[in-house]
Structure formats: C-alpha cells, structure tokens
Image 1 (cartoon, one colour):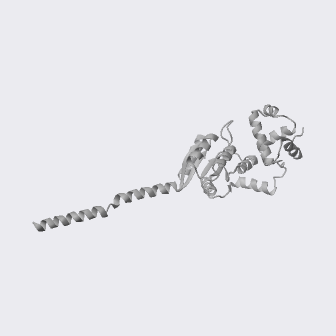
Image 2 (cartoon, helix red, strand yellow):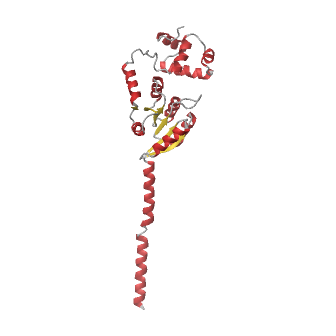
Image 3 (cartoon, one colour):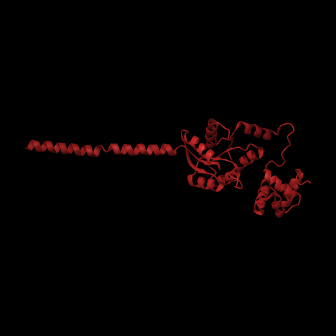
Length: 259
C-alpha cells in the first residue's frame, strides 16, 4: 500500500512540473500572430487620390499586390485626400492633378497635405504633361511625377523611390524638366515668362498689370472674387512682392499687361 501511495505521489509531482514548465504552445501562437502584424504594418502605407473610380480602384489593386505595400485609404477630392492622410498617416500619396470639374486641384491638395504632414511623399500620377502642371506640382512639394501611361514596373519604382526620399520623374517629364533647368527649349518655342507662376496666375497678373480691379478680373475670367484674391496672394508670395504695385512692376518688366 505504501509503495502504491508513493507511486501516485510521484506521478502527481511529475504532472505538476509539466504543467508549470510547458505552457509553450499558446504563447508561441500569440508570438507568431504578433510577428504577422508587425510584418504587415512594417511595409509602405499608401493613399490613392483620383476622381476616376475605375482608375483609382485599378491603382489600389496594383499597389496592394506589391510585396511590402498596403493601400490604407482612397480619396477622390481634396478634402477627402486631406482627411485620409490625417487619419491613416501614409508614407506615400498617389495624387492625380485633376480632381473633378470645379474642384480644387491636386496641386492644392499636395500643398495642404505636406503642410499638415511633411513626412509624407507625394507621387503625382496624371494625364497632364504640360510644363505648368509639372512645375506647379514640384513647387507644391511633390517628389515624383509620372503620366498615367506608366507601366506597373514604373509605378512601383516611383512609389519606392519617393518613399526613400528620392525625386523621380517619368522619361518624358524628365526631359522637359532638364530643358527648363538648362534653359533649352524646342526650336520656335516661346519662353514662358515668370515660370514660377501657373497659367491662371499669369492670366490674373496680366489683367492686374492692365489696371483691372479684382471684381473686373473675376468677371473677365469667370472666377469668384475670393478666388481672384487667393491667386493674387499666391502671386505676391511667389514673386516675393511686397504689394500689388510691386507685382505690377514685375509683370510689366516681364512683358505682361500690354494691350
């Protein structure tokens, strides 16, 4: 009897030691789950901004299929883009420049996003390939500029480049940028005066230099008086002009304001 009791005591002691020494399986499962979450969050976080739903969905699907990339938000207007960036804090924003008729442009959205979150990189992907769109985007802080005809490989390269602080321009855009920087232009092309201004800002400044007031300019260009005031504020900032009169002098020196 005594031997049987001793055997039972030894068995209970071994079971107790096993239960305290081996709670390994559940902990291992929790650790592997944590590792999966860390891996997902450790990749590039992207917000796609485009007012065309089919293109936006296609871009999101393409980016979501890339290793180490996750699309955390989508937007089709300036306000939605700013809200998505504020909510999701992405590493990269894919930005179209044309965000619907009458809507604020992607340039303005880029400027506002980078004012609120300078660490975010903006890669413009658009149909617009004119000089004004390219340079306005870069002045607003975009790090890259691709046309919508770019291949999936070019899109991936652009996303990863701007995410790592590089500046990337598509082939056609890069050649135009180099021509602008070096002062070279196609034969017969007319140099752009005050290239730091957008086309609309030059139109406004031209009318200011002709002596029109804000109300007359708004009627001529079919803009609201508030929009005209905003353009004038941007013009003064870009030209580093202290007053409207100084801006008029700069405009006339550049050849604007003539009849």
